[in-house]
Length: 379
Image 1 (cartoon, rainbow, N blue to C red):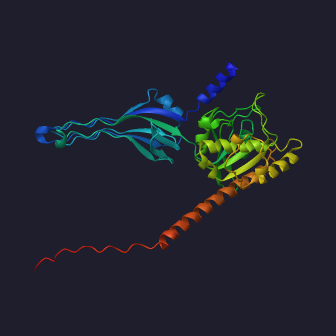
Image 2: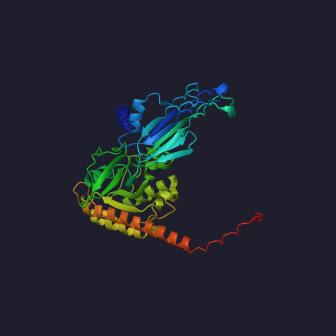
Image 3: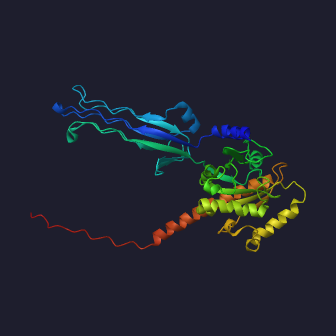
């Protein structure tokens, strides 16, 4: 067991989704009192989004994780105005949230080229500060990666999420017949005939208690925040994590997954959601599917879980799609439903924005205030 846990740790250790850095702006340059010269401003430290970068690369390339900008040039007889110090750019992947150690958000990087100022350089010496320069800002920051994807796969371990992703897209996640084969997030691209692409994120499996960081808890759930829609994946035959864990039916699995999301961040349940019922190639699954559909339609009548495990909110799925990731059954139908759901979400958001703007235009505007006029100048 120790050997297995070491393997798991090493594999997950190759993926870094949170990094702590020390950043410091450059010190300003000295002023020149006898000639009134101004010292140059210290350089700034920026975090810039760039493709092809990972937090693991930053960690390996800069083991000390210190980024200090250049100092401003001193004022001199030849150059009374000192030059600005050199800026430092820390390149990071898109999807980064930059925070302080206290969790205060400094900024977000959602697309290539976006940048956030994390440490400002000090001012150069001038007459208002007795020609003495100031030091640059210094602090610890955190780069927190939250994957950006159109759809996020949500499910318990061994529900077949990795197999589903490999069937839907060209991604090659690790697949096995045991729980926790997915130890790091994977992104796959679903390709359509008209060349449209939809990104799907396969995330490490949840377990009961993930909201309090059991298992991979927060490492998984924080990535769900940035997906546009949720794709619940359940095993039609049910789920049991170990011999000591209780067996959960497919319906109970959906309820438990909903409860974990609700406890972590309730607004996650406002995202559009689809349900994939996997492993439909196994015997007697048609009967189990019909039973599940009946339970979803009459959720108040089926309460087999303890009261504290039943979610407060009822999650309604826009589509329920039975599939078999092993045989390819229902995969084309699923691709069509994913696209249909995303298009409906965009149309709904556009309609809401249009309605909001129309209401703003209809809202009566306050009359313009009369400007006070002073006495006319005498001729």
